[in-house]
Image 1 (cartoon, rainbow, N blue to C red):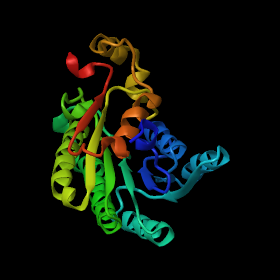
Image 2 (image 1 turned 90 degrees about the horizontal axis):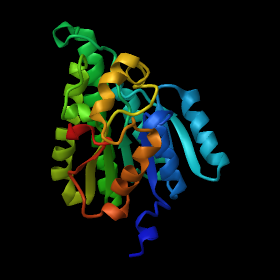
Image 3 (image 1 turned 135 degrees about the vertical axis):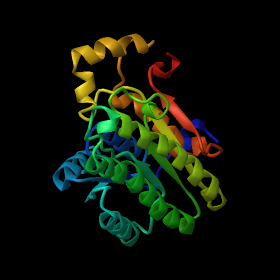
Length: 256
């Protein structure tokens, strides 16, 4: 198989939740550039449509679907619409995340705990369930979970967020094992510190950056564009024998 054809996503339908900005947007644009019809999902309809419109203007195929990953009803409705419109899903990128609290782990409130788990764990889980059912009927597919280096090295004052990202790694392994018989591959992308709006409290805080930079051997934080090569590999036929993997893209952060 030629290298170019390994990455060809023509005819594939991809859902990227958390796709209206940051890493999710960068992945969505890349999947479209390689031929997929990309459904952009996030909480805000106008933000989704803005990205989808931009992709279409560039010659790609994209549509928008507002979906709050903390709401199971919205998740089910999103997958029902995809099946009705496109016949089912081939690629799922679980990227949306919540991190509403930074502080001592022992002060984590029940409300904060619930919100973080609902999006980062329950939302990923039920999106994967819905996707896997559709993919099984279509003969296979690929699920990519966006985790974090916090899964392996819990962030200071980011206890519950780090715990949920560790759960994403375990979830990836569980789905990979059980869904392989249906030709569904499930992998995780593990970004390091990345310059997104989500990470702005860390990236744009001088004190935080002063402690962070010595832990980055490549000498800089990541950009959303740094994540797309790994994401494209994991969802494409180039990774046809790869499942249950966690691919770290962190500038060497976990080496320290």
